[in-house]
Length: 437
Image 1: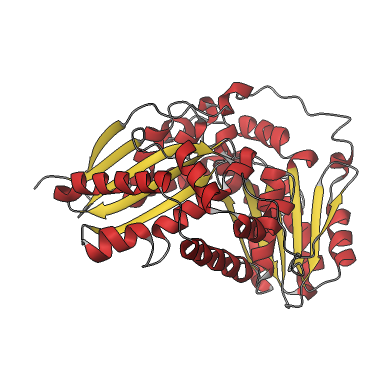
Image 2: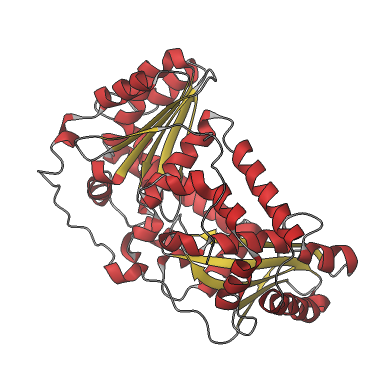
């Protein structure tokens, strides 16, 4: 297990204040001496929460939120944001959706309530629904024309048999074509409730000003939402839908062709703990860095630099909430597939049988510490960090403690993680080949 921290903690870089408002909503505010303010609204809902019947609804709703409220006509928010030289965007993932705006401090008091109104009170008007559906369907079509996204889809569908992470965030066109405005309004009422939302405001305004501006914009119906719950009639996932899938007991092989590829792509993946078991993920993060972060990492040095068997190689530990995936991906010529797979298996045996060197661990510690500092330089960076951890973990401490936890990991911790999770005899093997000419 990871050893207890013995060092005296360094002064904390982050100093946010977390408020739990009476309605159940979480507000996080922090002043930074940089003359912008980011407001980031996070909802704990993404494609993984959707049943198959409405898969793609969370992303479609992200689009429809901008179609106006009783106070704002469709497009008015964007016009007012652009007139102030501010920027805005939104994103939907498997586990969350968020909407963010970055503006000058002097414009925050005007623009923040407008953004909150959009997210809290979208009309989802019938006349705008069909035109926006066509926009979403076009986005789905473009994603299907993207080789990178197609490769990810093949990999994720091969790795998970049951978990909804195997589906695409955008949803299938056949489903998006059938959802209705009424279903979307009910979906919004179900998920965009105070207890399921986190609002983050970071920038060069006093914390009390940030808090006061946000609180003043919370609609009255939110303040009674817990005592007057909205009725729900749309389908929902059973609790068992997000139970982790068991580790594989053997190698499962999947092969695809893609006419757009010039070179074969290969991946090897293992089901590993997700964010709900975050303590089990840290050593896997370090192992991914040891294998492929930088030119001196093990797989890059061996497979690319010395043997010239691959064009690229990377290892990643993807942390979805319910379950993660540890994946080693390569681009290579087809004739090298067998040799590269055998060498990766050999590296995994080495990780399981021989402790990692202190020099390798030290290199990763430095990389992690630097990434943490660089990832905290802007208000938008911090707003994203706080929103992500509060939304998925209900706690900011894992974000702040990450560098110290990585510094505490030992060679024994890494060897234990490799033995427990990275079985060289059982993984998902996916090959995507160019079409034969």
